[in-house]
Image 1 (cartoon, rainbow, N blue to C red):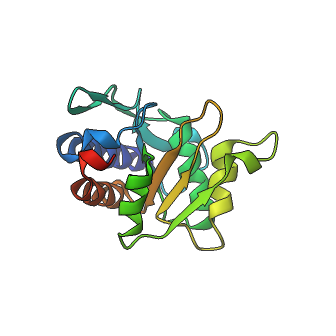
Image 2 (cartoon, rainbow, N blue to C red; image 1 turned 90 degrees about the vertical axis):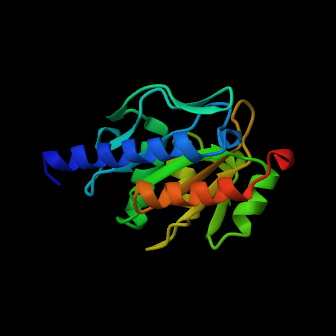
Length: 184
């Protein structure tokens, strides 16, 4: 993908952030904040993935992006995407949302493939996202949702993956419509 490839992924993430900001239930934002990313088609590094600089946070009852969408803005979401792309090159987008049993239950009732990993089983000397995402994937098979229950100092998290930001946002907004603030 040429120079316009990066412009296109940035624009796609900007559009996704706009929809998230307008329509997503702010209860879905984790304590550490949320991000959404999209990689160019031949991504190999963090600099090949567009994401929100400074994440997306909850500001009162609003969903608020802290910074602009830029290439290389999120190591965390980039690692998720780049690892997923090793198994399915079409899976170029991902976002993280808050984990709760209630949120997971709603996702389980949606037509999504869900897998999880246990941070306690992570081998020494590897990146959690590289190892955790890879442990949930198999040849030509990347799930729609990957979650973990956290660890000491690590918030439990749900990651929603897709071919592009629009498909990821579509699943997030379907989830958002189905949750009830009282059950979170």
